[in-house]
Length: 101
Image 1 (tube, rainbow, N blue to C red):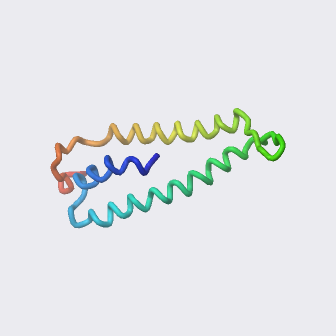
Image 2 (cartoon, rainbow, N blue to C red):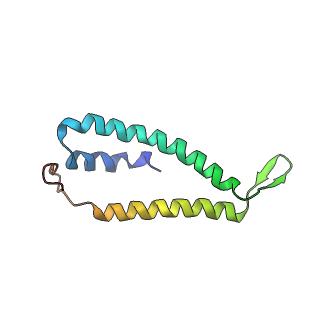
Image 3 (tube, rainbow, N blue to C red):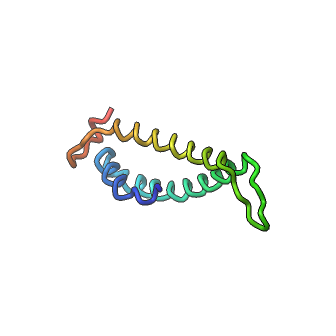
C-alpha cells in the first residue's frame, strides 16, 4: 500500500523541502514503509481477533464483523490520505521550501 507510492512521495518531498535534507527525508520515507507494514500487520490481526473466529478443523474462519472492522480501518486511513492530498499545493516542479508556511 505505502511502498508503491514512492514514485509520488519522493518528488513531493523534493519540491517541498530544502535540498540539503533530501537524503534524510527519502531514507525516512523508505524506513516508514517497513514500520507501516509491521504495524498494520499486527493491527489487522488484533482487529480480526476482536470477534471470535469459527474453527473448522485446523483453519480459523473469521466472521463478517472482523472483516468490517479491518475495512473500516482502511477506509479511515484512505479518507485521511484523501484529505491530505487535497491540502497539497501544486509546485509546478519548483522547490517551494522557503515559501511553505
